Length: 207
Image (tube, rainbow, N blue to C red):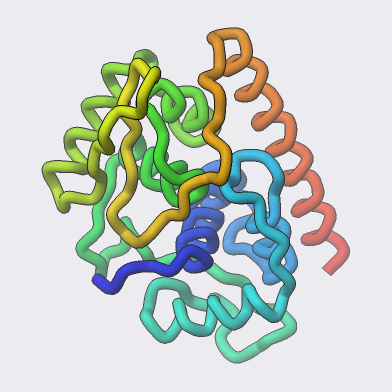
C-alpha cells in the first residue's frame, strides 16, 4: 500500500476514531470531519484545516479507494467513511485493540505503551499495559505495521510508531504524565468526545 501523507493520516485516523467512539453519527459529513481533524484534544500536531483542504485530501483518498462517499454524487448529502481496514475487500484486518492503537498512532504519532493504554480508553479498554504490548507485538509481526523507536534519553519506556507514512516529530517533547495527570487527561478527552458527539447529533437533526 502507498504511504499516507500527514493529512491523509489525520483524516483516516479521525474516521476510524468516530466510527468506534460515535457510531450513531458515522459516516461523517464534511463539516464534522473538518471539526474532527481540528480537534485540540487527542491530536498531535493540532491543525487548522478548512473544508477545501479536507475535501481535496478526501478526493485523493477516494481515488485510492481508502474512503468512500456513501451518498454517491449527491454533494449536499455527502457523508464519508473509511475503507482503510477491516473491510471485506482489504488486506488490513485488525482486532479491536489493534485498531484502537493504529488509530491513536495515526492521530498523535509515536507513543509509549502506557500512553496508548490511557489514550485508547475511548476506543478500547486495556486492563493493563501488557495487553497493549501484546497488540503492538501482533502489529509488528503482521506487517510490520508498527515499529519500536530507540528509547529517548531519560525516558523509561520506548515509543512505538506506525509504518503507514511519515509522522512529524513534535517541536517540543512532552513531559511524561504522572498517573494522576494521565487520569485527568483521559477524563478530559472523554468529556470533549461527549461534546463532539452532542454537536454532531445537533447537526444531524438540523440537516
